[in-house]
Image 1 (tube, one colour):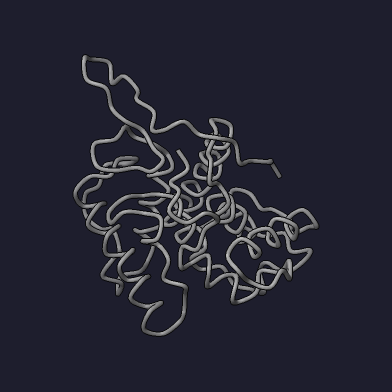
Image 2: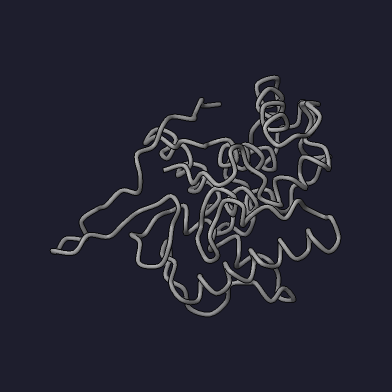
Length: 220
């Protein structure tokens, strides 16, 4: 597992080949340059299910927060917060860090944590869900995102895109080992949970709810 947590220096600006320059995240907003992290989020939203009103359907531009993606992203963010507040199924913290319609640390933490089953991320497990867990707690832990951190985050996103494009066939797996447990303990401590080192239900609820280390800090 890679180490992360460097210091970022604000949103980057990249040339689009002309006189205009397109911004890049994190966090990502309308009008920003295409990014595989956004494409992962789009595939995750598209896979929420036919009965979920926040499912991304119809035309969307891969890697770009277009109007359709933005609408479904807002739907997802508000649904997570509403569900958390009404039922306690998550911690409802997304908007403590991310603006409405912005793909940032808290929303990415939540999206990666969706669908993780506690029995698939036990000590010794070697599963796709452990990959999801690792990606989720990297986004949750990164109060400062270096270029190296972002390279790692994009590598996870590439795996995520491949997973959904291949019909939810895992392109890779990861093992829940002592390093994973240590990272989980760090995350639990940062959000006020007991430091068990296990991805228990309370920890998964916090991840889905967008609870992150240093809430309010976008990372770059």
